[in-house]
Image (cartoon, rainbow, N blue to C red):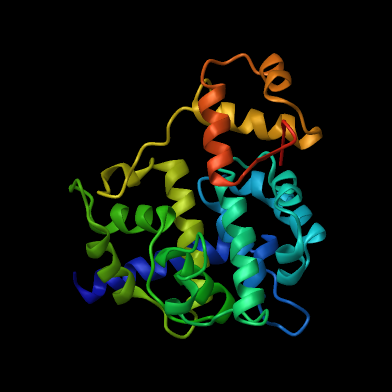
Length: 272
């Protein structure tokens, strides 16, 4: 890749961001002292996994109203966390978020780790989420990749290729990274990649990391979500639950949710 192509890519990303970037997203707003709260960033990053921005915004705002600090989230009942999460799907993310808050509170005295090695030890925090926290909360020039970033780089540098590996994309992420403004650069990449998805299509399909999201309607995920929705109102027996959810997979779903700790059974009744 020539330096000219690198410069052209950087200019195109920055120009898009200056003109059409999503500057008003709530998780992009600093605190009164100009800093970014790593707890807020962690909440937003886990919510944004496989969920559209417009669905996340009201949930993010409500969640932080209910659990304004990592300590308050850690002290909350998992059932209350799941109720606040309702509607976002992939409810294991809520459990991971709760567990991560507990670990930060118990092992780090409420102070978020500020290096990748420690961040990836938190439940639900992989290398890319840790990188996002480092960039957005601490403005560190780390290298990471996610779907919008993949889209931007595949579109510009891998136009005629298939099965593109993340390691090849990451080399370009490192080469083009703005070391003086990493936080804003990643915001710009995210917005530009999102724009490309809407206008030229999802280039992630040409990535070796791509896994097609399964259909929700009629899926086991839908049954899981319905179980949690029903139990968010009140505890009930398996028989009562079966009267509300007529699906042959219900028994297996309940067993799985119990094993995962997302629901519990006491005195013959299921509850969050």
